Length: 150
Image (cartoon, rainbow, N blue to C red; front, side):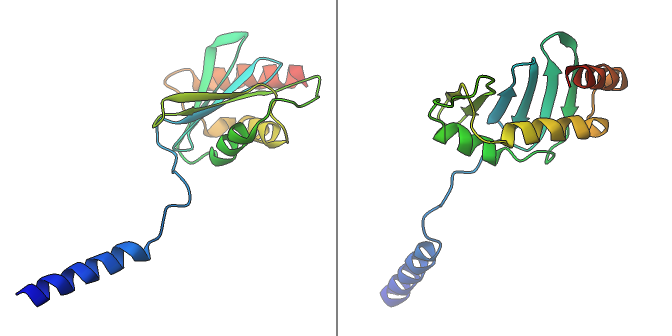
C-alpha cells in the first residue's frame, strides 16, 4: 500500500512540474483598455475582446461590439510600459483597468500607432456593432462625426 501511495505522489509531482510557470496573466472579462483621443472619441475594449464606442459630444449615441472583435492585449502592454514622456503635441490617453489587482494604470500620451489602428478598426466595423433599438441611428451619427473630424 505504501509503495503505491509513494508512486502516485511521485507521478503527481512529475505532472505538476511539467507545465512550468505561467508566462502571462490572462485578461479577465472585467479588465478593460480605454482609448481616448484628443477629438473626443472614446473606445473601451473589454477583456473578452468586445467593446463600446462613443463620442464626447454625442453621449446619447454609442455602439457595442461583440466579443473577440478587438485584441486588448497590446493595449495592456503599452499601458504597462508607458513612461508618459512622448513629445507629441497631440496625445492619445490610454488606460488599463486590471480587475484582479483592482488598479487603473494610465498612460497620458501613448506611444506607437496601436491606438490609431484600433480606433480605425472600430470605425470600419461599425456595422457589426450591436445596440438595443438605436444602433442604426447611432452608427450613422457616429460615422458622420468621424468623417467630419477627418
